[in-house]
Every structure is written in C-alpha cells, then in structure tokens.
Length: 239
Image 1 (cartoon, one colour):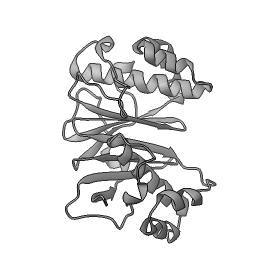
Image 2 (spheres, helix red, strand yellow):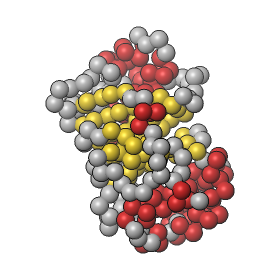
Image 3 (spheres, rainbow, N blue to C red):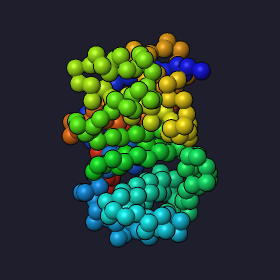
C-alpha cells in the first residue's frame, strides 16, 4: 500500500506566536519548542508533576540530560493541559500501555520528540505526530536510506546539494508519520514516500517540515491540513 501525502516545507519564523499561551487553538497544531538547557532550573519543581510510573522511569536514565528531557517533556505537557482545560495537574494521567501514549480522559491529542537541546511537544484536537532531529553533518546515513527509503527518495537525496540535510528532512517526516499512527520502525518504511516530489492532489495525510537555523529539522504529521502555531519560549504560566 502506498500512502498519499500532501507534503510542504515552511519557514518556522512565520508561525511563531508573539503572545502568551492561554488556550488551545483548535485550527492549528500547537507546537512548543523547549530549550532544555535554558529550563533545567524547573526540574525540582516539575518533579512533583510526574506520577509514580514516570518517576520510576526517569530514575532509570543513565545520563542526566536524558533524565531532564524526560522530566520536563512530561511535566510541561501536563502543565499546558492543565491550563487548557482548567484542571489540576495531578488529575492528568498519561496512558503508556498502548503503542502511542494517550490521555484518554481529555479530548486532545499530543506527541513528544526530543533531540540535542530541544524538546518538541505537539498538541492538537487532530491526530498528531512530531519529530525533531539535531543535524550531524558527519552522520553516515547511507545504510539507513538503503534499508528504509524507496528509490525515489534515494534519488532525490543523492541529487541534492546538501544530502545530509535532505536525509534529515525525510527522516523526520517518516518518524512524524509513524508516531502519529503509533507504529514503529518494523513498519514498511519504503511504502511511506516522503520525497518533495510526492504531493498528491487528494492526500490522506499531511506532513509539514521546517529547518531551524540552529541546526535542527522538525516535522509534524496529521490527518488534517493544519498550520502550526509555534511557541519557542515557555509561556508565562511556568514562571
């Protein structure tokens, strides 16, 4: 089965919110790009926002930065949802038993990704999958594209002026799609053609990608054609 996509690139600065976050914009994918290094001081306070399962999992991380990413991504998500739905944080429970974490008692979808210094949280009423990757210019990607990319994607990467950037663009697109629908890398990734040439007039799914000027690619996928609303600093409710 080949999936039909509408795939676009966008300039993230156009969609950055200049106001404070107060409620969910139901006509957008609400995106939060959080710099972990700038917000490490929130960890002691935010530890109490985690439930027992999340605390146990956080304690198992070997590297401190991985632990911080996990704590802040879950706690910030809960804080945002408590603001949106006007409920107490300790009433928000994430169900990790399914292939994709969900919050069953709230009418909302979310997805989380992290890489390098950033955590990327997407919140929407629509199905949502997000992925962010820090670009490593020396990354050896040839084995990955030969295993997970189809011939059309490989051709466009090899013809690109910057092959590494093109690889990261396509990889975040694939990951975002898989995460939207709760599937893993055992999925037939060759059936997901996310090249710039694949832009169907009657798509089933929408994928949007952007390059951050500090060396990250991020993408999000949804079943609806929604523009992002990007918050690149934490809302005032956190301070």
